[in-house]
Length: 353
Image (cartoon, rainbow, N blue to C red; front, side):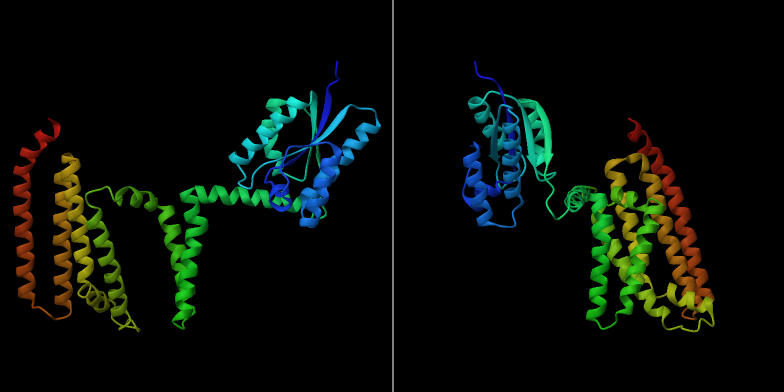
């Protein structure tokens, strides 16, 4: 009856032996592994797997000299590291165990990468020991690499985290690049602080969650919201341009009135956004139709009053004309309230039916 042996196992998960030296596993016996180590060392003198093969032979000889029944084996995976390489390693290990009756394995590796095969090994044969060989570049460097690799992978898979770690710096770099291209690098710092401020403001008040919910492409009002944002951006830039006309700020009311009378696009953006919200409420939740319609109307009326009041302060219209506008706004408001009172009676029962 044959005595079971201890396997001294070398694992090449990414198949450097096959790719660089043209040798495929499994390899059984000291002679075949020694030849493979020499071929791999000649093909790539910097390859750490060469040292793993020599270390496996070293452990095998020590056990053999002590009179322990043992055999040295090397298995190779695939260049496509992951599921595919682990399947190849598992298949080669099965072939080895059919040829050699073994009671356990001593795993010889050069770091964390090859140790990912541990679950497969443990399901087939007991692991007696793990002999990790540390090459001169230092174990801490390799472990740091794998930690960084794991965190980078997690960041790439998490959209929210990727937006923070990659998206915000990426946008900042774009702003700096555009600033240098325009020959005004100081604008880059303004852009950086602006992006940082917007991010902190949105996060602090939960605006990012609101925007993610409200501005979904699946929603009816998405097109209106998008158009409103674009018009709003142009309107803000327009107001900034007019703000530059008053560097001394000697008359703040005059400055405010000038800005309010020159940002028609912002008024239009508000109106479009509210109309989109009204259409969305009408198509999805009739309970909110009246409140949304009222908010849309009062936003439009308030914008109209602000616009005309600013024109009056600037002297563009007379007091009489302003009063006429206010009377018209008040009349439309009363008419709207009267009509919505009748509509509420018709819509509300449908919403609850």
